[in-house]
Length: 494
Image (cartoon, rainbow, N blue to C red; front, top):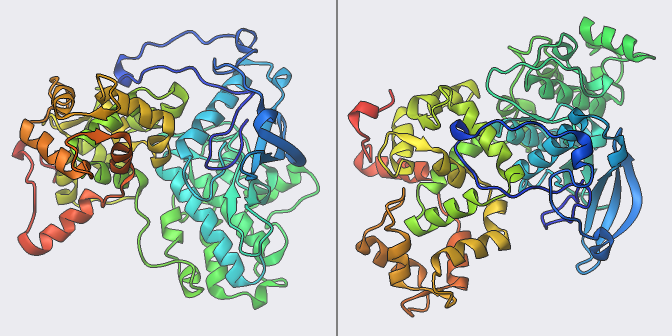
């Protein structure tokens, strides 16, 4: 389906229809096309010759529908993993939807160093497990459940001993909402959680799979074994874990505890990804720290809040013009938070969504975040605001997106953005209306050469510049002058 690296890969089998983003509450349901009607192009894009840019090599793995091969970029020499899918095997609308969803999820998760896109002593096992759990935490924070975690779905980036590992194969992955339960039995027998076999599961099932992986890393054997799938499932449901036979007597109690917390048969008490990253066994081996893993969405929202109005409007232009499959994950996240289906997110809805995911945000921080993102002072976050704030850095920095945003402001096509063009673009009565004083401040910040205009290089510099989250800024401010940005009393979260 695609090549696994951070550069765009040609996808001959899968492509996507471009459409403007709209608030979920206003999107009408469309009849689902039959598989035959989209057999030529699954997502409506044209075809490109993959082998013009990539040299395909040895087979790395095979699945039910696809084959993954080593691919080398002819121009750069970069090695990637390229998955191809036989369209003749997609015989139902469900098969087609599965492929389309995998593309959407790969777009949604793109940018994480240990996720492809389109060990051992205890210390080695701990290091490897931490990477896997970090990936799972990242996926879950973006409301994606992998559902097929196993050693075969982690690839080494290179033959080097210290090579990074990459999580791959999101063919069975799904978007989920907080509290949503799934019933279909999917995954690989050794790694399936007991609640999956009971047809009632959520993202905790991924943690169980990680526990099985760790058990195998430490002992060389799966914890639940059988000659047939039926026998394996019987052992999984029984849930007895062997910590008595070799090599377990020589394995540390902390490592055993880590395994046991992941293989807890009760998903409600099973350790979460962020809890595991603070587990003593990981810390004492120098792999994990005491620092809580930041929630991806809160980090993105907090960083967006610190951007000037030009960058925020440029991000809105990019977000609303991205292909439907690239924003499908963000749309699902918005809908999961917008519990009353109003097309907006309130402070209370955001707080509840974070609570359901195990993240805690202080009332003052939530107040600050909402006040800075809610540019029209409506007391809510609009769909376009959410899209712009939460899209990934990879999506933001794609050349085609950067050019489209620049041309939006460069109305006369001169190759630069003038003061007058900025005033016109930021004073159209939209969500990000700016005063002339604010426009002058933006020019002073972005116009590096002092020409009085913003050229493309300066625009890109502004767009790619790293900025601290508004919540970190708020913390620093509180240390000297107490709470900042008091929000309207009627809308304050308690």
